[in-house]
Length: 287
Image 1 (spheres, rainbow, N blue to C red):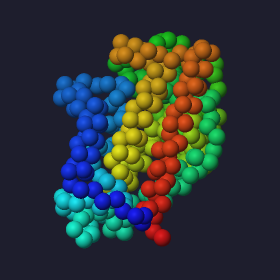
Image 2: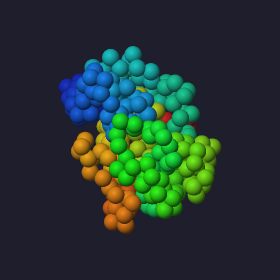
Image 3: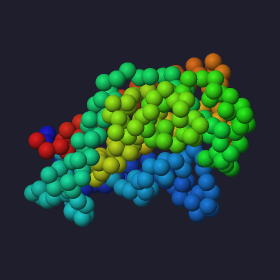
Image 4: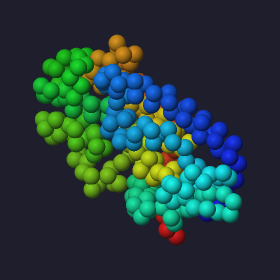
């Protein structure tokens, strides 16, 4: 452990309130849509595929090496212990699953960080998920180019998805078109920092390490995942302009160039978050 930071009660309560206000930008509209039984083809993914409940995203945790004065309420959270007149997270007191998760996350993120970003996939994973299909995943949203036009794009461009959790949703007809077969068992060997889904998954790894993850890191990962998801769906075959998502037309050279520039920007933005998660993992693993 490093030298702990001591937070007086008014300070950490202000940080908790600021964190909650920050993420309510996304959690409150999601709750309102659910009450109306209204689906959202872009934002729902961040609350369904990623399984953290909005209430837990809104909760503030300090992370390791922080002493909370007046923080007795945290003693009900696994891993928190008394330390003199304060309360802190003790990695040794966390459930065993946290250390096991930290070991996997450390291996995955370190391997990802060591690779160059590949920027040539052009978001075709979403197109491959509807290729030669009569039942698109977002059946309430029209395909920009229609079914035949969508299939033609998939057939005209190289499909090179490295992410297992995107590839597994490819249609049966699309899977043979992919340059590799990214199995779950090979995730550490395949993950690379240019992949939009690998960047969004930083949010997943952040909440999988909770309650050890500092809330600010969790929120930073979620905020980046929101931006990445928007590009993911703007570059998809769906017509989402009416919802405020103008298309990135990856079927054109200009659109592919636009996508690659954005992809490179997200890879750069993800790098410091990946480093912060790696530092957290090093604290959570047994010495």
